[in-house]
Image (cartoon, rainbow, N blue to C red; front, top):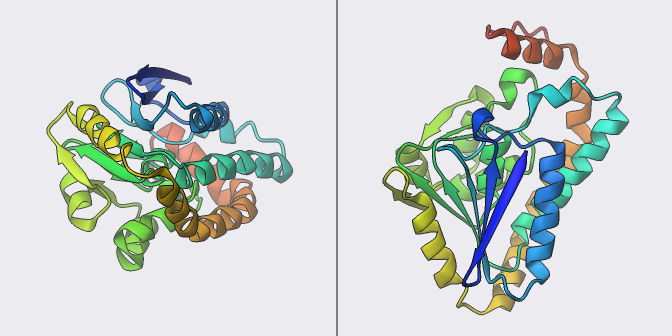
Length: 253
């Protein structure tokens, strides 16, 4: 997937840019995004970053097609090392990092938004943790970043029931920091990022580093467990059901 970028007056906007497929975030996309954030972190011309999606949606999440190409759990563990680098970099990013969400933020897209320090969403935004529908646990740090935002009990319900949360409910729960009208999320997110960029950078970096400890634990847990699940019969059934547009039949194997 293409990730486009634009820099204006210290604000870098990174756009997940494959609108025909609602901007899935596959392995190479995660690698490129991590590299872009690394470059932005050390670039004095960049004072704040906004992450958004093209075509009226944030991101449909991980590219399920890639799961069928994995050769072994060892290869899968390598891919999760890239996820760990990306999300670890996001939650510790020393400059303002704001998500601008329109439309769907599903699975890994949900996780990307939750890893940002501020989430701005239009009223038509939708968040769903759909991992359970394909026999997997939430990944990309979501098992830590979502409870940190809204608490353990509501997060557990969302995870275990693959619940869809609309923007209004997300705002009530604390997932969404600010609501906007449709097609206004990027403008508001940019304004928030610019204001935040005027604050002292070192306290921001230290606070984020402290709060990242639980995210590190979640990322290591998923790096160990998710490769096992990816090669389970239930995950294979979940992928088949997804592509065949039917309800999966899981057998706990």
